[in-house]
Image (cartoon, rainbow, N blue to C red; front, side):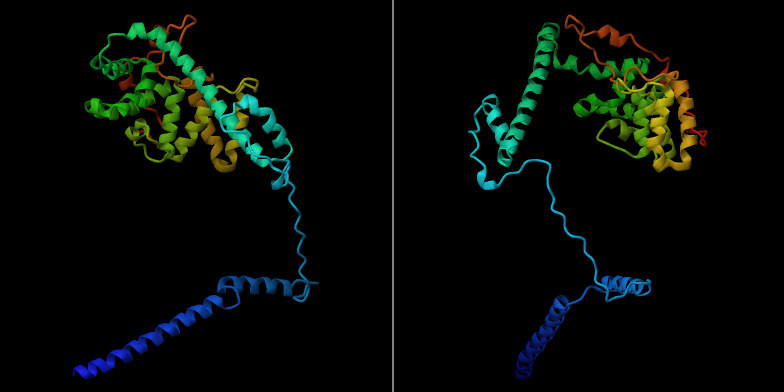
Amino acid sequence: MSNEISTRKPFAALALTALLGLLVGTIWSAATSIGPPASVAADQRCQSEIIATTPGVSLASPVTVPPVRPWHPDVPISPRHTWQPLPPNDMPLRASFAILKARADQGDASAACRLSVNLGKCRDILEAEVAVTRIKFAHEHLLPSCAGMTQAELRLEHRYLRQAALAGNLAAIESYVRGRLLKVDPYSHLDDLEAYRAEVRPLLETAAQHGSALAVMYLQSGFAGIYSNDLAFKALNLPFDDDRAQELRILSELAMNVAPGRDQSLDSRRARIREQSLPYLGDRYDELERRALQRYQAWFGGQPSQQMGLGLSAHDGPNGVPQFNEACSGAHIDDPLNQPPIAWSGDENG
């Protein structure tokens, strides 16, 4: 029995080897065979049939291939062997600028690259210097006012922001719904998350109906399914509704202040929005615009928003002192959690 098995093993091995060889040969033959795949061949046959049935055109007619036009970039590029060594990395840009610019203008790509990255770095540094100067100025002015405050006292910020929001301060509502404090320090505010989740939508709907452009944009993004790490979107958990999203997008653009120098009139803004929207909204646009215009009159008084939802922030006055009282004495809404929700067309329950 053992002899029979031992004689079968070489035979089986040879048979397996032969089978593998045949399989590899078949694959190699298919891979190296001349000719396009079946789908491409079918397309070519179809094209040939079209050519054959076209008057004045035969399969024997030569195919005219347009000549390849050389591409001439509109920037100077000199031969690589003419490029000069670059200045040392630590050379100040003020000292190397003229050298690098002259070489770059003559087509030295390495000089152009060095000049670009050096200019970008200096731009970042100089912009940061301006920001640091402002922060330092604010730090110096506020430090005496903030000295002695404990971490436990500082953590009360969210508690009183929520109190101001629920009392109806519109700027406080805009800051509260962003959830910044909950996101920055969630472990200190675990007990506040459930209340926040329940309060975000009614607060946003109330704020939107009282002229908050930020609230309109939050609701529009929520209905459009555009989510981010912002806690407000997660708390809203709105169903996808493209009609509502597009209606609110049109409203948001109507309520947005246009750039200085552009026509501020309502007709001009409507024309721009229509031109941008018609390609993808088509026949839906007129009805969506009609609803948006009604809300624009009711919620914004038919005027662009004077603020784009900066929330509760104290802007520095002429003397560098933050204007706390101005931020806290603005628009108020009575009982914002119990205001009527937005009435949506075709859905009485919103």
